[in-house]
Image (cartoon, rainbow, N blue to C red; front, side, top):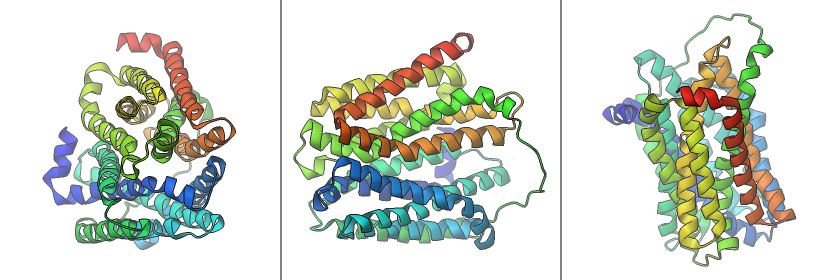
Length: 389
């Protein structure tokens, strides 16, 4: 909670955290309308998966150019520009009259999502170093909070707006206006100049991180999958008819993930990183079991339990990666986060193919199986360390 107090104590910190919230505020609204887009364009689950892959492709292809752009434009300045471009870009997938244009619009949205994500994380890192404050974890908590607010507010606004694009436009204007007002607190921030030192990566030293990177891949795959497929699961498997209830699964997931991330640091101090990852997997597995029961109330509780379980894992994985012997903290965290980010992008795509080939319920059974596999891998790999901690 200390990091949350830091963010709420000064507009300088809150304004940056609000970028995180804004990112998922828009995405939380978008996921409400994935079933609508599917019906409008008469798509199957596989085609939805391909469209989401175009979104992921836009992120991946543009990432190498982000450091160059932020250096030329300015880190703080591009963070604001990125929010504006990213928010605006999400109007077009809802207006796309054809499947091809849907894929193109999601590809463009992916470009701005990826670039904004890199910029806002770098902005937090820069401010943390300059002010000797740690609030990265709480900033990510605001990301989860934004998704919860976007989906919750959106569920009520579904009955207000006659067209999805009008709803999204309303949210986009809110995001742009609020971020434009708050941007004065970080707009002039630029990246620190670092000396260019040639240093080869020792891949042998990275071997201990492979299991950590695999866990990050699985956990972030689950995060991405639930974000994009929870609404369809409630509609097609659970049988939810009311449009304004389709986003409830994502709401429960995001609220509990926010709660977990705001309190996890204190728990980690008491029981250690490995133990909290271990217990997080157990909690998430219980949540998936509840989701698979496919009764509306139990499924919602399941999404919340999964959110609570997953919330504590990724920050702790980064913490473990940063403490690995023989590996620089920046290298270890970059390696694990890079693999995990790939999982976040490919998870929704993979679920689309499984759902199309078999069923959507089997897709969530697959997520449960992966989580149990991670639990067993931790049990075998880190059993002695967990007991000691």
